[in-house]
Image (cartoon, rainbow, N blue to C red; front, side, top):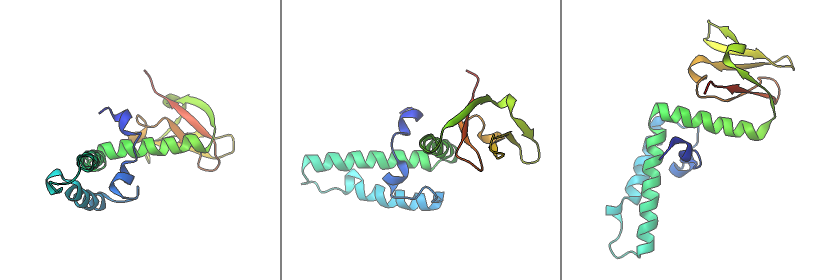
Length: 148
């Protein structure tokens, strides 16, 4: 399954977890649910439709854990969720390349002044993953253009 396709589902919801949950909490929820929906734990005389639903749920739970249980894929997923939320909140003020932003070596971030006097900031380790950056004082955003 391509990573872009995985973004369409709310993996936190599938595990019954809050997006602020730590990996340990996510693991507990995963383990509880995976046992509940495991095919070997289902009644042999259950209707075929019920067995299919349990199997589908089992697969979704396993996929949720593969994404949220791994720090790298969880970070990508969280960044994309945040970006999708931003798209619904405010307008894109302009499109910029990373080279147009100022580098701050103290906290390893790139920044750009907003017309409201606020600042758009993206950290070096997030720069390749992020496409929308919100201003820290208003609802405007800039779209970070990546070289293709």
